[in-house]
Length: 112
Length: 113
Image (cartoon, rainbow over all chains, first blue to last red):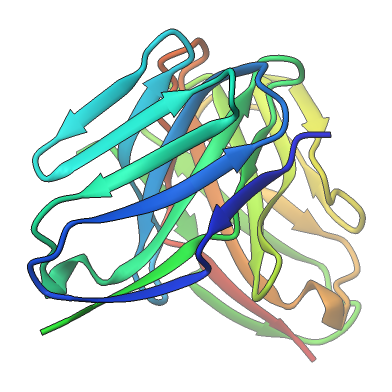
């Protein structure tokens, strides 16, 4: 059974720093891996999607990587800003049974 | 505007009173799904559907029903709600295939007393 783990559960960093959020998964048979942002009390906003054949995707200050063989994905945020404060979730789309398995998220707080 | 719309956004109900949470998407997506989000447990998939009249159980289907009579709509039905179904619910949709970016609704906060 696929398990998706995100470490750390919470992170506080000063504004301007670069940071990395980690996501690991136990079953490498995935269609893709997707990173989301969730603001308190709100829905999920898709940030980046990496197909199983890709190694990384970039959007603005965000860069997501995928290493299927090691079961890991990272989300790199450059030059962090207070507006980046949110919970970040990764989700693995399984090609075996079409289920999407989420990690529990990393709660990020950027200190002004 | 491409979107997934859930209704209602907030609902307080009593144990045993049947309720339906609606979900509609305007992107002609084949895949739709429901999740519940609970503190410490994260997002867990309840049911999903790969097309009209095709539904499958997710990880936590007990106590829920769904239907997919039309491509755009995927209602979540709680026939006899219980307090342990108090949660934040999300509907999502996507196309099928490897480039399946998922779009989420704004969530429905359900309280069962």
